[in-house]
Image 1 (tube, rainbow, N blue to C red):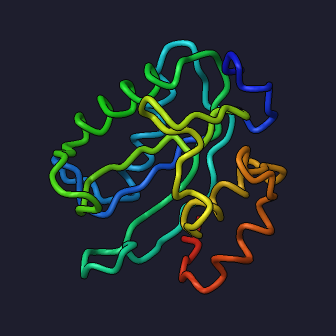
Image 2: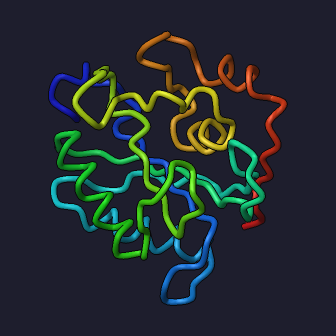
Length: 174
């Protein structure tokens, strides 16, 4: 569990997404599977659960290809800074180059929550400031942590999902 996290049972939650092929040619879904395996190699943490995979339109709408999204629940002991650094290194190995905000990308890894930790600075901000407004985050989050509550508002996943019911997200087969 994360020190100072309040020992929240949901552990560490990392969103996995992609909407461009990786530089090695694999499509977004294959890249997401690759990323989960790479996350499993980060020292001091382990993968506890992986959500179903979902497809969604980019937010904000942009004409980009649809995204594949999922969620990984991790356990272990790691600082937010060390986890962010490890995730950004995995993104770079997938060929991600940071340009403008919300640009299409071969891989996007976001820390959604680290137990009950709440912090506004320094980066990463935890919990992720836009997570509760995005169905493509909340649906896979429910798969791996159905009892999760937003550490800021205290609201449960079903309450949060009801607010984003108009966002089109499709569960992928398999």
